[in-house]
Amino acid sequence: MQEMNKDEAAFKGYTQHFLEALWELDPDRGTMNGYDKYDSVLLVPSAGYRDKITKFCKVETDSLLRYDPNTLNDANKIDFQLIQNELQRMQWEVQSLKDYEWNPNTYNIISTFAHILNENYAPLDKRLRNFYEKMENIPAYYKEAEKQIKNPVPELTSLTIEQLTGGVTVFENDFADSLKKTKIADATKKQMLARAKLSADAIKSFTDWLGKLKSVKPRSFRLGQNLYQDKFKYEIQSSLTAQQTFNAATERKRLLHREMIKLSKQLWPKYFGKADMPKDSPMLVGKMIDTLSAKHVKPDQFQSAIQNLIPKLTDFVKTKNLLTQDASKPLIVRKEPAYMAGVAGASVSSPGPYDKNGNTYFNVGSLTGWTPQRAESYLREYNQYMLQILCIHEAIPGHYTQLVYSNKTPSLVKSVLENGAMIEGWAVYGEEMMLDAGYGNNEPEMRLMWYKWNLRSVCNTILDYSVHANNMTKEQAIKLLTQEAFQQQAEAEGKWKRVSVSSVQLTSYYTGYKEITDLRDAYKKQMGEKYSVKDFNEKFLSYGSAPVKFIKELMLAKKKDAAK
Image 1 (cartoon, helix red, strand yellow):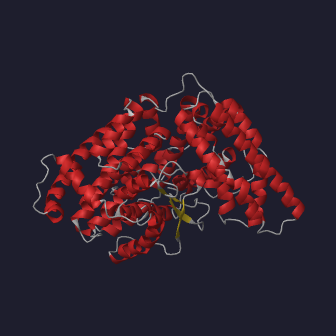
Image 2 (cartoon, one colour; image 1 turned 90 degrees about the vertical axis):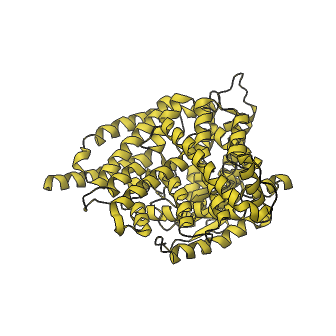
Image 3 (cartoon, helix red, strand yellow; image 1 turned 180 degrees about the vertical axis):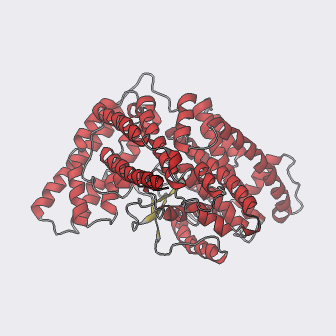
């Protein structure tokens, strides 16, 4: 027993060393996790830097394998597996994926600079000086990026130009505005602003270069079967393969269609009286959803409607005793920053594990400048029912709640090497859990719309796998989303853009949801009469953002002393 304690202590020491070495290797990643020691450092992405990554992976793998995971407690065993997976993933990215050659968006560094500027984890003067020092390498950084990019994907090139063009205001305006709030000497301010201008010019020069870059045969955004399967393995860390997950999603889609047909038949007389019901089932469901979708907010009320929903969701969770919320961690609803635009309409940004008192933001995409037709299509998608489900997913008890819990876990490794499928899966699980607790007054309309929303997660998986591994065309994708998932044209077009600039991430929603609900059912069976929703939720969340397959091993373990 004494020897095991030694192993535990030694391994804990190793995890601290690993994270410190990781932040030194990747300062930007450290900053985004709330670790500010290397905030002033910007490393140039050269071939020599990639050699450092490869060497790091080999050295750290050797160090990790000195420990026998069988001698570690359950919590440390998970950390061992997470570190091992991360080292394999990093090496695979450099040696096999090679996205530094074809994805210009890997060189979008603006979010890190915006983080330093906007988050109050250190005095403003200190953060601005770090910002200033970090800017020194920006011209060299983008000159090197031009050397590394070989045959960029057109869709990723366009996204990068869009995000950098919008985000350059961080250097042109925001930095100067922040400087005005300090007592830094005017001569020093002038020097700092001059570097900010050089930085902005370097970024604009890079976007100009990207815009003029021509390729006779540009690389497809599709990953292909082999790269896709590997990326799924490293990023999702599921007990299922990509193909098995796709098969399960296809089966789930059939089940949801059956349930939606039942509810549409039930609701038909309420909305259409004695009018003939369509014999074609998809047409019936589509007409029912289309009718319900007409109830939505006005374009200029989109953000305020979200702000008004947050306290209602908080009260419901408390009243129904679904889990304990931390009132000391406020959620701030804000307009989506320009450097994040172009991928998703709503998202949550959480403080890193080293910055536990940082702000959590609910980023809401703006409809400003949209044509009335496009805005109407978007708002019909996010109608009065869907907007509530969106807020459950993104905020309470979804991402915001889960990430607050995650930042409390004793293991930094689980917070840093967070599992996207667990995070997204929890948000999807949370939607169904709220409805099962009576949210929406058990109205069939709300349940029908949730089925449609859940169908979105399911079809995200089908779409992502079909596009990247099976060459699904845009026409086939739009048909899947509009006719089989009952989505608005604007939503379907937006999803096509997203699948063309990302891969695997879209599968995380359904994969995590399936694994969590399977675990919940098994845990419920094991606990019998002692089972409670609150107990399951809080126990599950206590393990941090670890892959569900690892949490499952702990929660279903017979031994009562399983460590968290």
